Length: 322
Image (cartoon, rainbow, N blue to C red; front, side, top):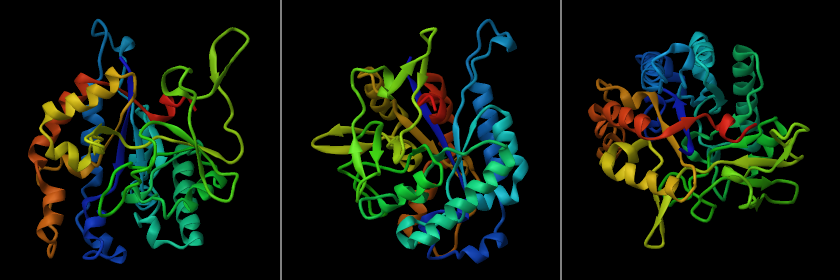
């Protein structure tokens, strides 16, 4: 089975971009926190759904995921970050205050990323190499952010969503993993070698014939775009989040399965609040905002269990062999 990337964007319900006009950053601490409990629910579910061989604990093949964590969350729940790492998952950066990049000046973005990265590295004791922008806000207009990520020591980004959307989207971007070349005046897309192994990551071999990943060249950054399928000349999102809650599971399974059947990995994302059946309502939110955040919350955990049983998952760090 092809290993697919399972990713969790660790943020609380009051930090969702859809509510950013209603809830100020300064007021976050006044809301009932639910992220710790909901993230534990995901961690326990990953443990429970991990396949076993002969039911022997020492032969378990656990499901691993990448947790993109807000620095704001990490400051308030340091033990949660440590537990995520101790359970064998990858800790990655989701910025500090969940502000879309198109609302940042370059220096503001750099400080936001640097602050969050430092907090996470201090808690885990290891380098943080992965980044995902809040609300997938790296678009054609904010590609300048990629060079800052590379300069700050990140090895990969997973912010590109090759679709059209009212908040985000980069429909012209490749649909599968590629490399950003950041050495010129503007970022250039460098295709990966289709003749190399799965995921087509450039590699070399050690003396004993075992594969090792080359060191990432200066000014280059791996990109793992959010998954889509091609239909009628358009990219149809099937990567998780609200799309997972809205689509019937049988459709999601078919779409994701078609990617694996063609020899391609997919990347799936989820927020901890999407498993919260008692998610508090946000006063003043309009119908569309409420619809996007609340539809099918009651069914989502059951659908996620099926997904974890039907497909193989790992962290982005392991899949890209970084």
